[in-house]
Image 1 (cartoon, rainbow, N blue to C red):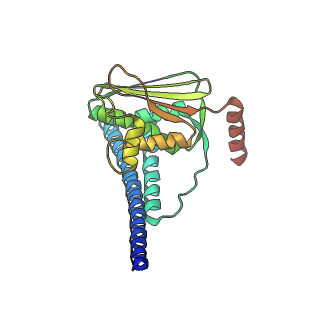
Image 2 (cartoon, rainbow, N blue to C red; image 1 turned 45 degrees about the horizontal axis):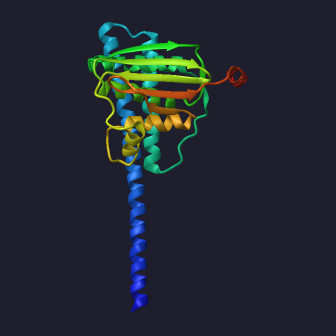
Image 3 (cartoon, rainbow, N blue to C red; image 1 turned 180 degrees about the vertical axis):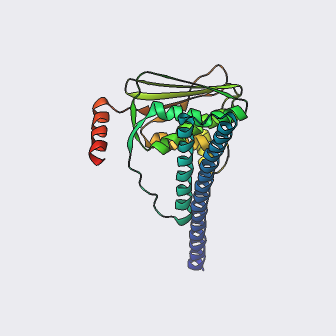
Length: 252
């Protein structure tokens, strides 16, 4: 009797563990799909509003077209992530490259300016220091900058300040808004979103993961009003940038 009871308890325990593992796997896949949908919806909205604004004003400048192309590239990457979640195959490998971060940030701001206008939010962007490179995936980095700007537009009020700079071997981006501020630390919001417990913070979770994968960090900084998020990434040294440029030239 004892052996039978013990076997029953072991079987029940094993079934419980298996069910828990299956639930965690399902939750993880559902969150991956939700993140891909988030990354698909945002860029497509930004691109659509950019085209509408350009058509209405007759101003489809090279800068705006480049910004729209960047967001469409993000949308294509989101579709790839969605297909990976659906088929459970390994994601495609995208070789890292030298990314001119000042240009990337300017393109992200330009891409989201029409969305800010539609929401009654004005974007102000500045860059200080040299235009340095960051080693990584351009579209993934655009996901990080785009999500920070989109988050400030959605939850901020009035105006959003985007300040980029390069100094001491690091690229730094500060995104400040005049809204009510963050309801919790960045890490906690990211954890809630990753666990599928909250919609708020999904963009921050995406940005946090991308920045970390590029050797950087994302955190909130003190602000007298609203939220102030700081993104930092290691900048390429001059010799690395020269070597990267030479390698591209040989491949071309």
